[in-house]
Image (cartoon, rainbow, N blue to C red; front, side, top):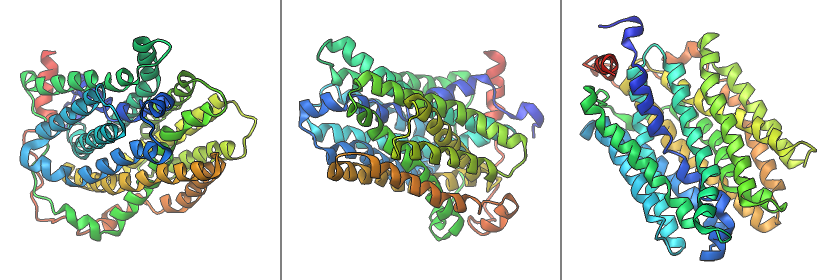
Length: 426
């Protein structure tokens, strides 16, 4: 077995991780800044608008639950490729979408593709970078958030570039098919780079997660944290549009929030890991930042929108990446840890999908977002005592019997081993 730095994948595979991850949120954030032209063209109501976020989140969750099984059948390489192809098809179909039904169908298909990728990538990353799991999970999470920022900022620009005074929202939404196709081709090209993207095909009884209190606690925390993100993606640009802001200005605020998420998602796991295995103080820090941001929105505090966006982005991005590391830390085996992370994401994203629907309902019935922001602040308060349960000294006890201990601990030729040869040739 290779040890030390040589066990970890290098720059070549890190680029692959970033390219794939950039596709996991761009389709979701691209519609929010273009909400008004979409509504004018299709007549879509606020409930249906919420479904543009709710449907893909549910699809992400449902597909994440079955992603591990797909990976065991066709391998992570084939599974991730299938997910990217679904995202590309969904985004491309938006160029000819004529109404709400087509938009909702494309949102669900893209969400399913994202769920498949997200179910497989954490285990792949853990296997490829066993000694740098904090840093590489942070990079993966930061790239996810970065893709969301690209969607929020670039989609209005593309729409105006193609449509002029009347933004071509079809172009703004469908442009992300090109990024998905590029990532897919790069991912498939890995064979020529002489390494495989197959995580260990270990037979896992992932359904046993349903009987695990720790798996449910992880899923609940992950879902409630991401509920704040999905609500902001769905409604923050519209919140500022109500105050007279343009679509590009609202998208820029969302992109700025995402930029803060990128920095936090990249930095927080590395900082936390440098201080030990206990992630609880850092999770509390990110939750306090979220609470401050939501309170500022709730009470209409005299704070610049830029500052609120940065604080919220720091809290949301850091909490997301720390949750990913937290799930992977619970089990040493990459396949088992990946299955637990898949369950956390699967159930968690379905929980998160409810948040924009609730906040959209509040907006429709009250005419404003004050109570919606207050609800999200209350959720953060409820999360604070929950994250204190994740004592690293109790990880083994909390996951005892979760997977069959007699299952082989695969140490076959892995991503990291084979990628080393590729890196030496690059």
